[in-house]
Length: 478
Ligand code: UDP
Image 1 (cartoon, helix red, strand yellow):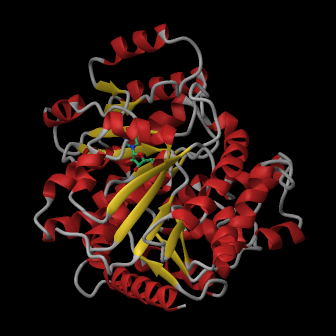
Image 2: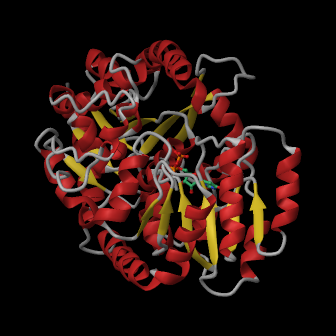
């Protein structure tokens, strides 16, 4: 493949966190397959980890128009970069990446004809506007959560937030968000709405970035019309041009298969070392017998929570594969070793798994998840029912949709008790299995339809590429 000198030059700029990098790298590869030239921005810190744990350079080297560029996230190398320091991380990123972006856009040749910016980065629209470069927003979270973010001014006006930890408000129905009147409770609101202070900087970052999406040329979402149609109709009243192109991992897999490039599909975008030994373990388990447990890349568990999950899993008598990300559990590591010993009979623990492959494995029958959006979509595509234990961001709303709207699992929200864990695992794996599997398989079929010939996500990707070519043409002519 040779680089086409007339191809539009796109800049893709994700928040350099695992979930965001994963979906934006998939988007970048989808667009590279269509022959677009792409510069992909990543922080030095995350890029170093990608280089260490993946084949990312070799994979993207097959696209001649593709290049990585890195910037400082403004933090020292040994900074822990966990969810506990999120405000510090955003502050440092804004200070460091904004001037970098501006200078880079001025200096880069061939000039950037269009930016696809992570919709959570509120400074990107300011820079794009100043330099008169067309901007497309990509939000890596669910449409339902974006709609809730858009409704924050209404929620404040109605006195629904801040919740200020008022216990009685957690279970009360909130009727302020159109389309969610029948099932939205205080505890289902996105994480930022549960904090006590609406002047909190993260609250303001998210609100500001969301409202800016209504001013950009296009809003791209990793979802599909049959999954979130009603929520999308609401967002369309604020952002007229929305292209749903998800589930992105399935979309990419399908297009790679069509171009006979299945090796690339098996590659990972992981910031941790993938332990593939769990696939060998899964191969030895009976069909649909294993509950897969993972809380994603950001969630942290206390030692007490970890133990409640462990006892619940062991007492359920079901087999389990559990991802315990390094550094994700508080307390000392010796007891983790003891737990690993006690798990031998029915369980397997790894530090990081090839999640998409795990969920697609025939031995996996359920997913105990934190309801991150990538994980939710990956489970939907695999037709695997979920038990949700949401922690932050869009997760509490995603888990409510899993249980009340799509009916493909149970929401354990805000409870962490071994008896509840045990009961819910048995519900999903045994007692209510049939009903959940039926709905999950139905959604998986709709997901596949959306990226096949004539499907909405497939058609939207073509429209997006057309728009990018038009934007590029206009930028060059102006
Ligand atoms: N993931 C993985 N291996 C693991 C755990 C997670 O590859 O052991 C991937 C998972 O497939 C998903 C991403 O990490 O694509 C996590 O993103 P998500 O939006 O679900 O949650 P976040 O990490 O942003 O909270």
